[in-house]
Length: 620
Image (cartoon, rainbow, N blue to C red):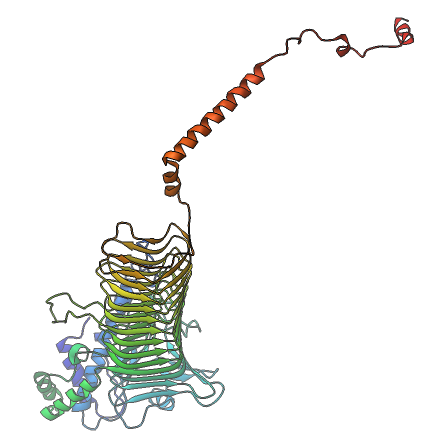
């Protein structure tokens, strides 16, 4: 059930009457238990196309849990805003009853909140176990101006924080405009994971929801940290999420309207929020509408989405690893600008290793590794968010300015790098090996540079530029192995100064309308149907290329074609006549009998001469 206006006013009245100190607000009526009917697994790969591994959860139930989490955060934000402005003398942290558990709210203060503060503020919700680990059984919300700082002590054992995640409920740590710091020490890491206290084990089931961390606006700083087995279903609740909003009112409910303030004041006797305070609130909200973050030496394993980022700027991720995600590894979803990802590995994830979605620009991936992912190693989508007039007035411009360099993209089930739309995209100086296709340029991507890469043993093509008038410059690459080196279909490409070897079908293939395509200065070696196949292609200019290392392989078509040449037919007929003559002669030879067959010498029918004594012996 969604919070109604009447229900909200009742909650506000309770806030106004509560006084200072720790505030307990009953809110069960806003979060009644629902009957959730599971509908089965998410068959994302049911169409037979390589789309990654099937998500193991419960789509219907998990989607409803995501909705409930949004409602909870809106409710907490609204109550916190009202309490901040209207309850005289209210200072410090307070707790709200939300559903079957509580949410600890940390308001602004100069010094950060620490592990020791959590032990004091919620002694039953943040408890230390016999093995030294802490179990957090209440959700935490960090408001603007506050910083939750979880630091590992400078000792070999480090710090373990386990987020309660049982069959009945799960907790979250959410910075609503505040800051979150999770950092290990010089000698030890900090470890954060989900925890099922009933089973005394990590929670690996997403169908009933799972604990997660989210920074919504504000700033996140993570270093020497291990984050594992968090999140479910959506990017926002996917495990470790860094999200902002491009519209202050899109998620944050903000202070109540003047009408709500008047009604609340009449009910509780509090002052009405003045206009200057409203202006100050609006300025603070705008400040925290976009998230910034820095991650250094962070390991993320087994999350639903490894790391999810949207509406963010100045994101720096270094020396980190993301593995075993149930969906994508690292996702830069929407409106992410100026992100730098270096020396970071994303491997063994169910779908893509790295995903860069529309409206994301100026992303640099340097010395990254994308290996053994269920679909693509790296995916860029630079297509416009709209193709014409639309409800929210979104521009129809493509996005781009992204680059992948000095990286390794190996052994992914589908494509190594996919560039779908966008402009000014560079893939250079990378090792790209053992994917289905190395680099794919499609959906009208333009201004693409694919250069100085080493391609090894792709199953189909090393580079494919295809359809929707996509265009790319493919130059100075080394391509070894595979069915086809470079493939262009209904697109344009400048293919120059590439070295191709050990190709088994075509070195370069041109299909359809390829106007403006240039193929020049390439060295093509291998054994296949043709070094450069351009039959039926329209508009290409194929000039000087070195084909001395190419050995044409006989195919069925070639064999049939050569057999039906005039001279070949003459020799075939002559050979047939000779063979027929030999067979006939052999048959006649087998039928000839000797003329003396009935006149056999007596010596051939007996043993010849015998001694007289032997004959006498026979007579007796």
